[in-house]
Image 1 (cartoon, one colour):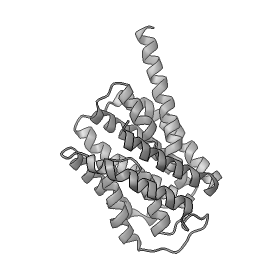
Image 2 (image 1 turned 180 degrees about the horizontal axis):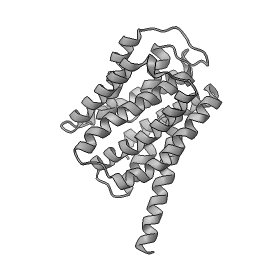
Image 3 (image 1 turned 90 degrees about the vertical axis):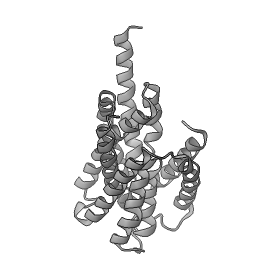
Image 4 (image 1 turned 30 degrees about the vertical axis):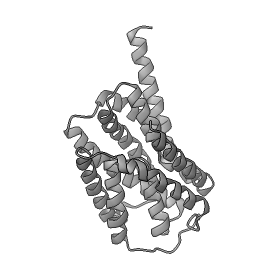
Length: 253
């Protein structure tokens, strides 16, 4: 097989992977389960794979966020402090991860995700309607925005699921509204992390941008499915993604 054919095959693999991952990520998170192994398969070292994953993921979360904004599932004017806290948290996590290892989180996160899956399957917070808000927006921004943003910059797997859980359990959002807000914060944390990875020269731009083209399509498709399907599809999908991420972390990529 010629080098041109190999390059074409790789480009197609990256594009399709980005589109599939973008669709999944817009609906339930977990797109990194698909994209990160493919970037490693393409020959990138782990740090460059993580950095490039933030690049392509930014396009998918942007596409999904834009769709949700246009359909008024979320309003930026309601969450400026939450966005700021998430950005600062992700920035802090990205800077810190360059000096510390993630072994402890690698052991803790699967347990948290399994508990999250159980909550979404059995918990009272799953409803097509909003419920009572438990904490203020400012407190939520500091507790969930900064903390999960930090986690996303430092480690990452399941961050979207944790954002969604926070919106449902603490803000009383219905699942569609929670998912829409989650994509805004996912985009925020991706961009914050990408800035500092790019400054360090870790991003493989050519590979990432090919995958990003697929993410633009997948992110919009996934957001569209969220608006149309609602709780019927989202709840089991979030449970499945949470459990799959747990297994992946336990056995490794």
